[in-house]
Amino acid sequence: MTELIVALDVEEKKATELVNLLSEEVEIFKIGFPLFSTCSPEFIKKLQEKKKKIFFDFKFHDIPATVSRAVLALMKYKPFAFTLHISGGEKMLKEAVDTVRHQPVVMRPLLFGVTVLTSLEEEDIEVLGFKRKLSNQVVRFALLAKNVGLNGIVASGREIDLIRKACGEDFLLVVPGIRLAGEEIYDQRRTITPALASAKGANYIVVGRPITESEEPLTIVKKIKQEI
Image 1 (cartoon, rainbow, N blue to C red):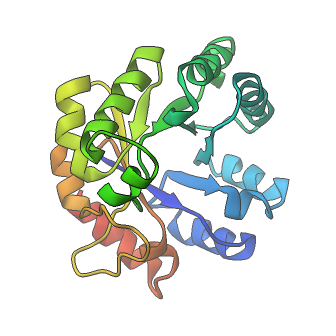
Image 2 (spheres, rainbow, N blue to C red):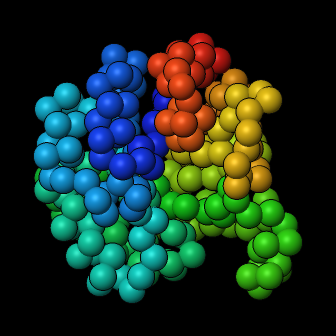
């Protein structure tokens, strides 16, 4: 089954309105830097009171000790999941995994490794110095994430088939860059529809602007859920 994650990359007032509006349809809300850097602790507390799952999308990428402290600092919010950049390296990823494993079982969030951002294409990773094709680099990152004990990865829907072949069916896949057919893709490049992402085996899909910038966000959510 594919679950919908709504990305609340908006200011607190609008985020509150969206959560209240979508609460009956959405269980998981993603909080990244745009909202977290400005919202009050009360906003997150209200999400917890509504028994919503909090997905912290901070894409940690730092030395192992710093990432470990960051994970510990955010555990007080009892998040459902965190994201880390796989390019932070094996030691950083292992440190995050060990930090989580030392918490009580009921407190342990899922850890998802970010592979290659969906805003990037082949020429972009060439500029960064990667010698492999983009899809091959994603698979390499996915295997590293699995080997160090992450629960899953964040990757474009276009790489789902390759990741499933390399990592198996139990490895969790979070797919951003979701767009309904004919929608504006904004700064995304490797996009996919909700229906196709679900058919290929995405465990979670992340949708932000198509919902948060819509005049009828609840209608869009229902349409996406029908597709998956």
